[in-house]
Length: 282
Ligand code: AMP
Image 1 (cartoon, rainbow, N blue to C red):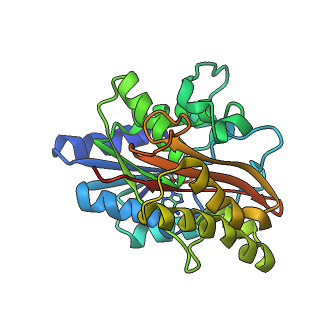
Image 2 (cartoon, rainbow, N blue to C red):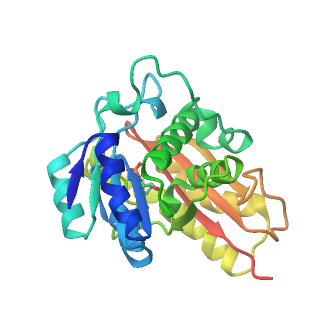
Image 3 (cartoon, rainbow, N blue to C red):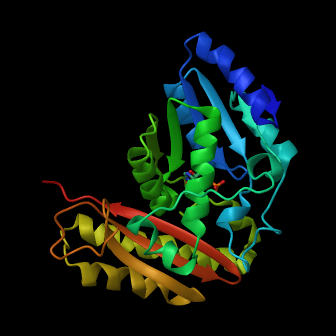
């Protein structure tokens, strides 16, 4: 496995693979890897010849009062996990490599970036779209892998790939969960034992609604109310919304199109997100 920190070296290493007609898979991450990230790597290994993982805590997607400076980092552990998982290249650039002096050009997503997390994290998806676009241009992968846990991010990235004619297949990998069904996240390490227990309310609420949906419930308000009952133990519920999977606009009763039930909530000082997809069978 190669660890690379500059764009010039990365291009050089990838040229060789491209000359050999290798299919390149790309997994962008902010590091502090867990089994969710490893599922993306596994999917890439299954579908591609060469897997590139980027580890970059992207400053432009953090708001001024968010956790950029305290975001968990453990590069040596990440490197070992990548090596053991069969990654070919870890790309771990310094901030200056991605955002050199006088950088001023951003990718501005549209309507998909406005609801849900976008309403509480102004500029977040602009930062995400910009860094993902830049990383796509650096790696030029055939396929890129993203996790369903960040449902709105998937929608924004998929839209960007179409709108900007990026010839990259976007694959979405199902959310990997802890034993209690809490969605895995690098931020889970902020949770103390009591917070961990209270955070389980999020997936409990989502799955309670999904179970009623499976039993035939198609009313949007009722499905939201079922989830909400469980969410009373979180400290601040930022949003609990059932949205159309394609437009992210509020879903309409009775549900007859794929919809995502999405939550953003604080448990203690930690902001967590999660979702389940409700897919009506025709
Ligand atoms: P992050 O390092 O949190 O920016 O995440 C990097 C990638 O891993 C994103 O595409 C995430 O959606 C994905 N990811 C994070 N957590 C999970 C999870 N629990 N299951 C599946 N994918 C995940």
